Amino acid sequence: MPHRVVITGIGAITPLGITPQQIISALKSNQTNFKRSTVEPDCVVCPVKDFNLVNYTGKFKNRRYLNQGASLSVGAAIIALNDASLSRQELSHAGLFIGSGPNLDIENEFLNICNGTTQWSNVQALWLLKFLPNTAASIIAQLTGIHGESATLGTACAASLQAIGSAYHKIKDGYLDIAVAGGGDSRINRGALMAYKKANAIYCGTGSPDKVCRPFDQNRSGFVSGEGAAFFVLESMAHATQRNATMIAEIVGFGASMDGYQMTAPHPEGIYASQALTQALEKAKLNDHEIDVIATHGTGTQLNDIMEAKLIENLFVSGKPHVIALKSWIGHLAAACGSVELALTLICMKHNYIPEIRNLTHPCHPSVNFIRAPKREAFKTFILENFGFGGQNCAIVVSKI
Image (cartoon, rainbow, N blue to C red; front, side):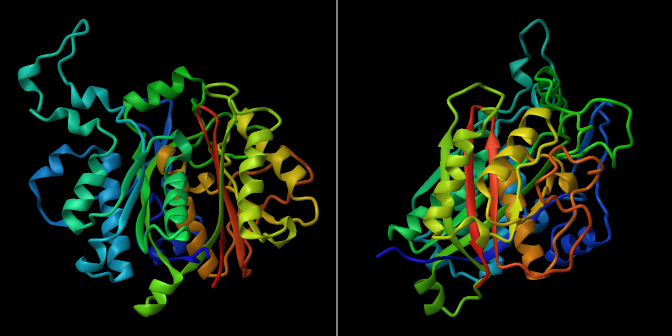
C-alpha cells in the first residue's frame, strides 16, 4: 500500500529573505531585490542578501570547494533539518536528493586564461570539485550524517523539483522513511549572464530593475537571473506521526515528461508539459477544479509564457484556479527555481496569502485567471510546474493538512 508523504521541515535562502517571516513580509510589502548587474550592466539580477555559509555550518575546510549555488544548497539544507528536529541517528538512514546546475562562474574560477590556456599553478588542487554536480550532496552528508540513497539531478530548470519528486516516490513506494530534497543555484555571474545573452533568453536593456521582470505580460522581453536555494524534509506520514513531528503539508502527486522537441524552446502546444501536469493530478486523485492555485513556471520569455498560458486554459477547464508567477518576485533561479517556488508557495499557504504577478499590465492570454492584485485568501491545494531547457517538464501537487 502506498505511503502518504508529508513535509516536516523547510529551509529557504531567497532574494526575499531567509526566514518565513522575512519572506511573507517582503511579499506583502512588495519589497524585492532586483538590481542592475555590476558585471553586465545591461542585465538585471536578483541576488540573495548578506549570505554567509559559516552562519549555518560553522567553519569547515571543505567550504572552499563549494561554488555559490552549492553553498546556498548546503545552507538551506541545514535550515530544513533544524526545522524538522531530526536526530543524527534518524538521519543516518535518510535519503538525499538534490537539483544542481553547472558552475558557470568561469572567470572567477580561472583568473588567468589567455588564448585558451591558464596558469595551472594558480588553480586549487581540487578545483574540479567546484564543477562536480554532487559536491553539495557530499558536503551535506558530511555535515549532517545522512548515509542513505542519494541522487543529484541536472535537469536544468526542472532539476530541484524533480529531486523533490524523486524523494517523494522513494518514500511513497516504501524505500525510505525520510528524505532531504531540494536544490540551489546562482546565475548572476558574468559567465551565466553571457550564456543567457547568447541564447537570447534574458532581459537586456535600460529599464528600471524592479519593472523588467514581467511574466505573462504582452511586453515581456526575457527573464531576470537570480540565485537561491530551498530544501525540504520529507517523511512518510506514519514515521512523522510516530515521532510527533509537525506536518507542514502533504505531497499528493508528481508527474514528469520530456518534450523531445528542441534544446531551448518548449513544444508550442505544450503537449508533453500537459502530460506532466495530468500525471501529477491523476496521482493526486484530484480533478482540475479541485486545484486552488497554480504556481507557474512563468519565466517572462515569449515562448514559455504563451505555451504555459495555453496549457492552463486547455487543462483547467472546469474551474478558474488562481494563477501566480513567483519569478516576478525573485527572478529565475535556474536549477533551484522549483524548490524555492515550492517554499514560497507553502509559506503563502500557511499565511492565507496569494501574491500578485508583479508588472503584469497587459496579460498575454485573456481567459487565464492571472492574479494581478494580492489576495488575503486561504487555499488548500496547489500545483507547481517547471519546464527546463532540453524539454524537461515536471509538476507537483501539494495539499494542506
